[in-house]
Length: 215
Image 1: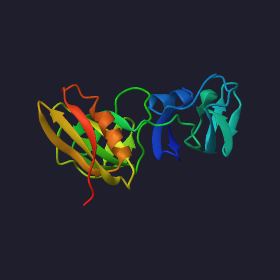
Image 2 (image 1 turned 120 degrees about the horizontal axis):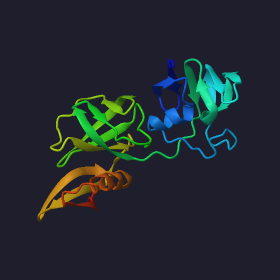
Image 3 (image 1 turned 45 degrees about the vertical axis):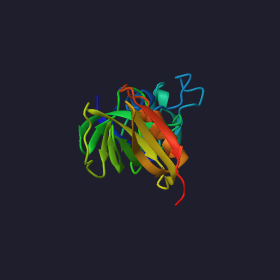
């Protein structure tokens, strides 16, 4: 077994891979939810563009880039560079384990990770901090800036947002008859994503979106 590298141009990811497991299974293990169906190279769902490198197919045939390959029957024979990875639509929020003020860990499973360079918001119980994803290594997310807050229960929600996310809406938290503004001056789409992420909490609080008057 050899340890090689797979560069995925579309997602700005660089992953360690093995030569004894097909590329589809390794992408799924890295939380990349790739479209797939037959798993025998016939349906075309997991077809991707091999830009550089060499793979061996299940039947022993070897291919070199640039060419199209079915990930489910392709085994790496060298470091690879691929593009046009057929990812299923990415979710917009994740419940992450707190590693440090500048590092979070994605949950285990086959959820598509955010991408390097994404603008994100870290949702703490009583506040929101904006940040940027500097790098992703496996399940670990490295933030561009260190967070000034820390969670009480060692987990936080992370959402990806548009750079132009400002607007006339606010997200409120209501708990035990007390109201608190969590995030103000955001657009409606951002408020909906943040509300959905906060509602995964089990603290008994309610989260409301309100339109803010101009001026």
